[in-house]
Length: 223
Image (cartoon, rainbow, N blue to C red):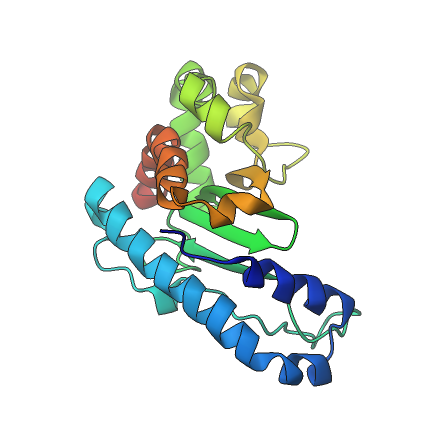
């Protein structure tokens, strides 16, 4: 049975066209039923399924993974009050822990499933680069695994123009050592959200990224 209905997409299509508090207040019940509650129920079920794959997810709670729909506009020129998507970063320690997890994002136009290490502290980044530099070919091989290429695509993230001298030789063999972030993001049609086998789709992406996620976690925990 599908977890979501077309009302999910209809709400966000309307919010895109009328991103103001009056429209939101008028359609708040639609948000609560078809977006907020449906999304939380799915993320809760996803956490249980992920915990069967990786025990590190066993103590994760949905409320610590789901991002608020309200935008923080304090330092933004864009003063629209609401995000036009629902999203969650399911990770041990919660959405902002820095632990590699799985990112789930749905809006009126597409579904994104990704993961990796998005927030990497300076000291952790150095240790992770040391790990990559010790065997650049091994890291390259992770990114070329057929399952990863099929379900996750390529490694993304902001890069430094230069790295410390001790990493320059390794960077010639593995340019990803320049990365400050190590994440990946698949984009799927919006109606994927309405499929009966949505959880299977999520697990396929989770499994495809498992070797890279374990590699990143090892480096970050070492830091």
